[in-house]
Length: 585
Image (cartoon, rainbow, N blue to C red; front, side):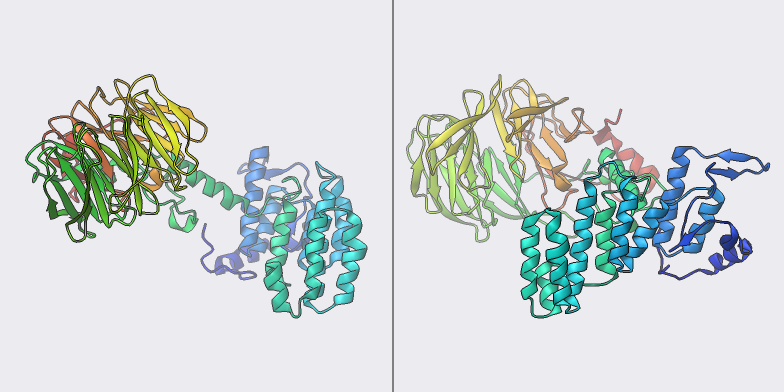
């Protein structure tokens, strides 16, 4: 349904043949032609069939014919529209609407105003006439100003627009345009295309919104319906993981949209075995170029992601974390990485990732447990705390800026406002803490311990791993539980789930049954179960830049990198299904 060069008034060779076949019927059928639109002369709305009988069209069939007619008219295939309306006995739009359209496009404003009186009886809301008249007069006023007819414009403003007593604020704005010194200045200040076809078409689009579709179809209605159909199919596609393109030229309308599971990060691309003990955490950098992994073996390994092959290579190892590394947090610009230890660890390490140097090591007290951390969006501060009742805000040099006593922290997150810190505590809740005005409030209340949580990029949704319950999705703004995801095995281990994919449409989590589970955000049942790990999967991280790349860290000492199916012959690819169970049913 692409135009492919069919411009206004241009007719193809096929169209010429079609016109020749009409043998003058178009002009003698009794219908009125105006700008290619045919008024109805056959109230029966019936078409001929192969056996010569007349078939009466249903309302749905009439609507389809009108939609096709409008689309063809937009391509400039006006004679084809005439023939279509003749044979079907349909009417593209009401004759009064056709007349109104022509007068608007020709700039005959007085005639267009008179047409409104005819249209009044066809409208559901008579009050809409005032709004339509206002739009007409506004266009008339602007065109007079552009032509330098200031007196005529002033007469429209005072004698026609003001007496309507509608949208006086807009009238005040319009009056200011009288001071414009030239046409370019007017177009810039009014944010208006200027006198001509473009602005009049835009005006018609606005005017059509006040008319019932039985009188005049909404603009580009067929394209709108097709776009909605494509979007609906994409929304229902379990594995759609690419940017939505609203341009109909980028998709085929001849086939239903479907994404193969083989394009989804369900298949093991790499197994990283450089750690020599349980791997407790993994996290891709914000730009997606690196992966950091932390292990019980006391090391952090930084991996470089190849931009072409998406393979990971060991970049550097950061050593010396005596208690092991159970949590990692990248600074907003990916310059720094903070490493935390398990419950009995009182130290926090801040590394410069680019140089591999330790920027600072923080330990406020040997009785502290600094097990969680979150960066402020400014990249100059961070908050840290643990389960022994302390909660600090520090700068890059480890200086203590603020503290919140008596808060036993399990997990932390800084919201985008730069002021609010979310903290899950030992009372099975998430509270919001404001370090500027020293206020706090309850946001989430669960019935079981919150082992970890993460927040979506827009700050609206929180993903919780809840002991013995699994993965829960909360709306932080409305403070309601949105969804409970099924399938995962979650006891009292700390497991970190994540949002991922384009527009964060997917959710992934590790599990104590050695699997990685993936859900579409809107569905409670998993769309994939990834097997391969041999012990508990502690953490999953989805690459924020490469939507088909994901990593998981496990107590089996490995990090698995997941991606689409390798490029193999179809019969070979079928054999890859053993590590990605299809959950479509």
